[in-house]
Figure 1 (cartoon, rainbow, N blue to C red):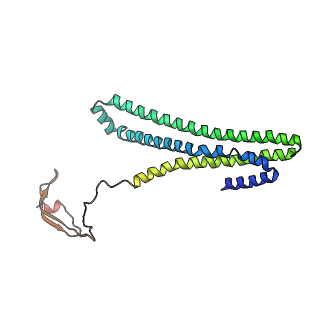
Figure 2 (figure 1 turned 180 degrees about the horizontal axis):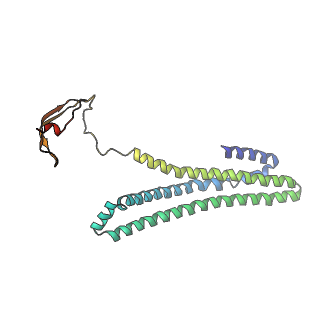
Figure 3 (figure 1 turned 90 degrees about the horizontal axis):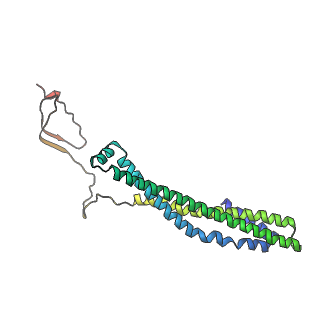
Length: 237
């Protein structure tokens, strides 16, 4: 919101000072807007790939980097293969991270370069107007300052849109989990249980453990909500 307010107020002041140079500064506006969608989609795809690679590598670390996982790898003689697979995954994570950072920084530098070119044009054409006596030096200096102020919020708004598009990838990952279908589902026509009531019945059950003799429960019935206690000492003569 603050960037929009700064942009509107600064453009108003520039139109009051010199509307021709203000229109010239706005000619570069498409250079801020047109690449945004393309760059945003590219960074969005790269971010999604980066998350998938990180997920794959984390899964490998969880399954392999523990005692049971190491024993399993050693048991099947897959040490070299597992090491190579993990190195490949780690390399892809590194490469996509570097590529994403380079792509993002290049886009930011390009926007800054457009702003610098716009400021240079204002000073060049404004200087011609000062020489011809159309505007004063003070007006030119004020316009140059205002141009820098409008390109700064434009750059911020453009980057905000790109960041928003990449942030949607995280929401997609969350919705993938929320939309995952249950592996265990009811059969078609299954009856919903309303206030289910159950009981437990044991018939001719016995058990034992080394410190005690055989224990026979004979039969046992437990109603819903009931409690019962079992003790081997009670069965001793």
